[in-house]
Image (cartoon, rainbow over the protein chains, first blue to last red):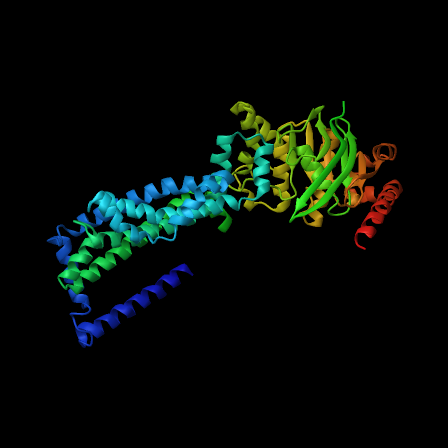
Amino acid sequence: MIARRSIVGLGTIMVLVGCWYVLTSATGLVSPGRFPSPQDAWESAWQVTVTGYANGRLHEHILHSLKLIALGFLVAAGTGVPLGLLMGWSRRADAIISPIFLLIRPIPPLAWIPLAILWLGLGDAAKIMVIWFAAFVPSVINSYTGVRTIECYVVEAASMLGTPRWRFVLEVLVPAASPMIFTGLRLSLQASWTTLVAAELVGALYGLGRILNVAQQDIYPGMILVGMICVAILGWATTRLLAHAESLALPWLRTAEA
Amino acid sequence: MDAIRFDGVHKAFRRAGIDFVALEKVDLAIAPQEFVAIVGPSGCGKTTCLRMAAGFEFPTSGEVTVDGRIVTAPGPDRAVVFQQFALFPWKTVFENIELGLRNKGVPKAERGDRVAEAIALMNLQGYETAFPHQLSGGMQQRVAIARAYVLDPDVLLMDEPFGALDAQTRVVMQEELVRLARRNPRTVLFITHSVEEAVYLADRVAVMTRRPGRIKEVINVKPVRVAEHWDDHARIEDVMDLESFVHLRTRIWKSLRDEKGSQDR
């Protein structure tokens, strides 16, 4: 069944590429200045991979972007998840922290870019900060919800068994909230990518956003497309990686679905 | 000394701005190793009684004592079996049963032995590494009972433990609990709305009034059970056919029915 779906999906993509070829190279209905032909895109990919473009070769740009994603995402998850768990568990922490949260939350993450650049310059630190702010919110909210939706009798069972505080946190609270925590992490990862590309568009020496920015200034549609495809592939790959981590971390959910 | 005592227990709630009295002067004393079932109309506060003995809730006035000490918090000396099983879905059967022993600081080797014993007691061999989701409701409740029994608690609190099971499974579990309780007597407080279940399992059956709940009367089943040799019958339906069983059941049912009738007015 799954194999059949994949074949159909592959067919869809091949039809799209075929249309792309017909509209650009074959008939010239879409001018090469607006959208590249498959050939242009291939040549751009070759160029950025082998000779380099916008200060570096493709793998350098990719590694740089991945580094920022990893750092921003990990900092956001590392602060957001514990904070969400704390707010979910303690009414007092919730009462103290949620007003700050309500105040900051409506600000779109990208609106932090100017302030981040002012504070930290055009380097990596500013981008990590913006990714952090963007990825932080979904981690907090979903961890919070994860704790709030724990069935009360599970908590009562743990206390009836005399579970000490830290064991309760590690072996009851966190696992019970973990499906929601992972939902939050998935959303955080998506937010990280969105924000990274935007932040690199504003100012960067390396990175996929840098490729997009320079290619736009050079009026180079082939390279723009290559940059976009790279972002799509990497976004998909990191999401798959997270899904894999989730299935390793939550074996009890895997067996429930099987 | 009584294992569990309710002395003039009064419990008032305030919900959505409306005060109501859940329990009004509940008095009940349960002797060590005695099996007492509470039956009553729904909403009469029987589960509240159990939750107060467990330490999940506290009386507005009056006292709940276990082994002479006023209950202040939940603890492994009073193991609870919940209607919803309340297992930890992320822990295997073994880990679920083991947690209470780890909390008590029992050494690993001894834990293994005791968990194995509890697993054998509840016929769960072969399911040690299964997760709760992979088990039927009846099997899950066996795990929950094993988790309670393994602690060797002074008191076992069972809150409609078979209420969520299908009829056939319920009968099997009732028969097993009778065997377990007769062979391995504990102080048990058992909440149910089934009169048959209460008469079949318990030494004494306490009937509660509708809300505000009080203990209306306490029927002593054990002398009849012993005199009429109920425990010689392995099957619940054979016991239920006995004249002495029918007589007690009808008596309790009538007492309860008066309460239900006035509630459904």
